[in-house]
Length: 380
Ligand SMILES: Cc1ncc(COP(=O)(O)O)c(C=O)c1O
Image (tube, rainbow, N blue to C red; front, side):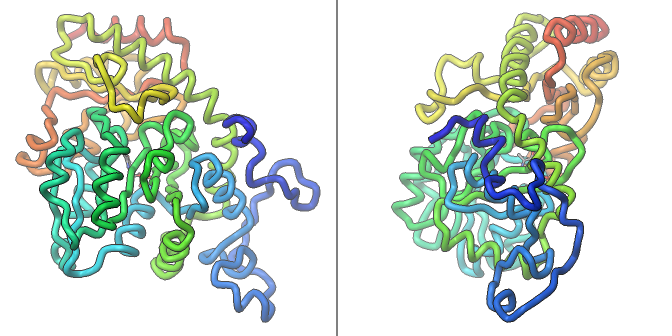
């Protein structure tokens, strides 16, 4: 198989449309119809909620990069998660889900008990907890490969083994690592979900999501539900994501290196109570031994909310903004943004403090980032 960067550039685009080197944007809602197209449930040339050539190219490219048998492009990461949940979970089932996940996903699952789905939460670093919760009624086991915001790694191989024994579906949100660093499908996950709004697009100018599948039967089921719900992505966003994906590898190399150095630098500062970044740990689960790096997010704790605010606001290069994983460095306070919808109890469960700061380290020059952080720390 060819290397990741070669595939990032060429996969899905082997067949050139009208000899165009770059795949054009098919900005059209519908296409001329005929009897053959009417029979095709996922035609790329019938109606854009069902499919579109700009979207098809990106689905094939990403599916290749994620190591899937296929994949579906969505309007957002949340669109992908919702659609996968609604495709699998039925009344009477339970969802066994990590406590250490993105606030938007936490907020989504709070609606599921009303639909007859029981929620069972576990610490994703504790496989023994999963073993006590999973049973024959479990529809999905859901974890983030590396959690938002405090970067707890999950043992995907161990979790996959237990999930398979109960014939449940293992869904892994791999947004924080990206397929360049780590591919959960290679370690037994059934579905790899990503918010493409983050590293894969990488330029903070698109909201989109993707789900890659190990099994084409499940992909077909999810695609049908996507068409019914209208959680499809759109051609212009697909074009931007396809363009961003071509440089994912070189960007991730810089994110990985810069964040590792930033984490090391901050861990030596006495004003910082705790820094979370996997390279600072003595060991990581075996499935991460070949991981190319741990991405650009670094989580740190300062003594209070006001210290966190002054740190972020004194920095000139880390822009205060809620998202992450763009080429520019960003900083946010999770209790005010990504996890604002959580109750005090849920925040405690997730181990989040008011003085917690999530840095998204960009690809600027490392020396400039370190001297900016040094300057910001001196102000608190
Ligand atoms: C880990 C993770 N998963 C999913 C999402 C949701 O993605 P989107 O904002 O594209 O809907 C986010 C958003 O921040 C996230 O951080």
